[in-house]
Amino acid sequence: MHGEAYAYATYALFADQARAQGLPSVQRLFQRTADVELGEHFAEEAKLSGLAGSDAANLRAATTGEDDESHTMYSTFAKQARQDGDTAAASLFEKIAKDEKTYHDAFGKALAVVRSGKGTVPAPPSVTPVSVRAGAPKVHADRTRQNLSTALHDEALVSAKYTQFAKAATAHGNQALARLFTGTADVERREHFAGAAQLAGIVQPTRQNLTTAINGEQYESRIMYPTYARHAKAAGDAQAAELFTRNANDETAHARSFENARNQLH
Image 1 (cartoon, rainbow, N blue to C red):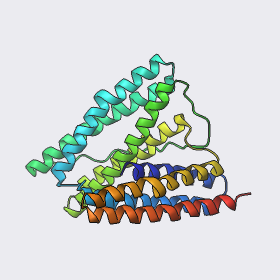
Image 2 (cartoon, rainbow, N blue to C red):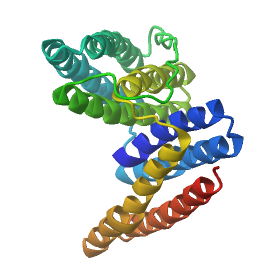
Image 3 (cartoon, helix red, strand yellow):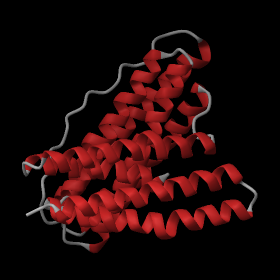
């Protein structure tokens, strides 16, 4: 699920870059593929793994994750970035830590409401999207680069998880909780992930973005998913094996579409 969440968030940024370069067909291709990665692959794997449970269970998982991010992970990343002279990254990590503390508290309050049946679920956070354009990395320390990579994968996964938690809350009839999860997911992806992506320089001109996407899709279709499918089949998990095989076939088609798009660029 980590790869699907990361692909969704990354392809959404690649779509924005294609639009900025006046390449609407490539923009649509990236966005369409991103939607498949989240809406089909991640969602199906999440269902099979039992990712989303009751509203109370989902809130407990969310508060635990936000507590670790706010008190440990991002505070450590910020301290290390300042030690290494990457002040922009340090400021971003400090902001994310502060945001995660706010979300931890909001989820805690929502959990109390769900448990007691009394009170009001907090309103979702507002989103201030970060615009990401092609550019070189804006950090110099290897440790900061690694921490940004960790942050990118974490924020993408958390955003995708909260999307599933929101769907579960909707199915349970709790629209207020669904809005809280959806709003938090948007901030995780459109602010935190995007801010880290800008500093890490993961968005490049569209030709290079297409090459990056091709390489990723080929790895998933030729190595990752076939390996997962073999392991699942050997373990007797026929449903998982079938899903991994289907995803591998989808990724083959995605790689081919990206190759065709790259070949058509002038």
